[in-house]
Image (tube, rainbow, N blue to C red):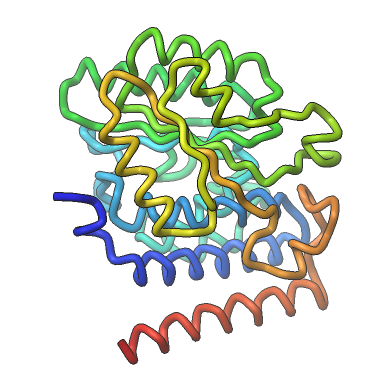
Length: 288
């Protein structure tokens, strides 16, 4: 059965809208945080957790599950939102993001949060960890897959490209890497700091099956994942061309929106926008 036969894209769009809303609420509760790069991966997370990945929220440590490594660890809030919405932990945990004693730290920690498969945050290191997981899955023979998220700025790290060579040598066709190509990093635009050029072409030259798509188009994301699954004997890279802060106008329009103060009017406006989008999607589903 094709993924497109088993995944309802309207439900995925609604899930993405819920992820954005809860991510905005999380960061707003704290008053500041890594919001831009968390929002830009919401659609891809919704596709993966909305029917692609083999997981069980009631059994987070199920040995045969698919794994997800958020190497760009500052996108943790969006991953937390997805996991909470699926029932991995209570929704009220989201209000404790990065607070003293929280189980939802700024960067993902597998020892603290149910559903987090790998501790990340030191950029580039999640790449190596994901490849280790993919090799272990292949040895287990259960057919499980590993999905890996890196940022375009993170691709400045040499460890990413060492990993690219390693994964091709090991023929890790159960590994799919998503590059969040939102064209911004910590202190500016990627093209001004270390221009990555055509990222998909680079991975192709390293022997990967590489695609470049609209990272906010859930149908395109699903189709790219299907193509990745069909690529035998090689790892796959899906470059998600996104907008940093995607789906929240007030955040999109901030030039340096990697880590921002987020309270008062900008927070209130963002919540209303996210609630409006979600309401429209729910209404359209009801009328279908």
